Image (cartoon, rainbow, N blue to C red; front, side, top):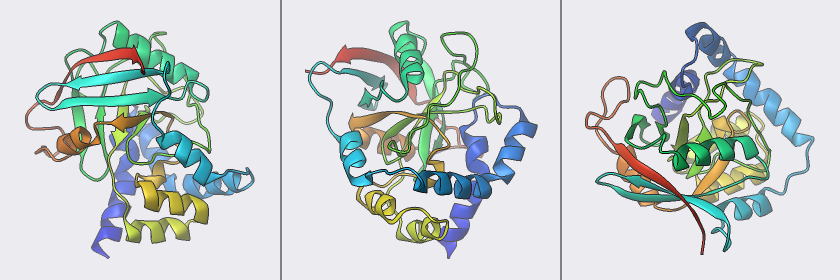
Length: 254
């Protein structure tokens, strides 16, 4: 029961947590409608034939030789390696990799960390209120029912504006593990049994499904993500000691 209560609290704040530089009024409105949004998205997805087992295996697989990947060098922690889904989220991938190549993320901190949820960075200001896309204007979500916020998914943070482009430079990596009580809760919202089975296999945070752009997946270095997620934080979920991205190296998988 305590976990369910905690989950409900997280549901109320997660959109605020994941907004980059959102206006408070717009964020509050979207947060209030989170339950309805989840139910509507689930109904829409049920109309689309998705082989969640096959798509999950594809999402979690190692990158193929020649595929573009990135190595996130985190000072004093180690490297986190991610692959991308250019076919589904081309703008998000281009935005992230271009920023990385140009050194935009060098020295940027993970400004918000919540254990068993996610770690968020990408804001040069380090406040959660800054950052912009490579086009110097927000761009829209790129959603696919086949990409799920499983543990280790690389997603775009959002300013939370409904019906408007709201993505800039901020991103997050889901860190949560599978939780049986949470699975039961999500089942009550009508999530497909096949999807819940993959959640059991891979963990993650299903309430983010079809609400945030999944454009990459960690394929090596989740132990580093776990270490970052376990750091001491203040009341605003900001690490007490800065967790710094030294650089992000864009390379080709061997």
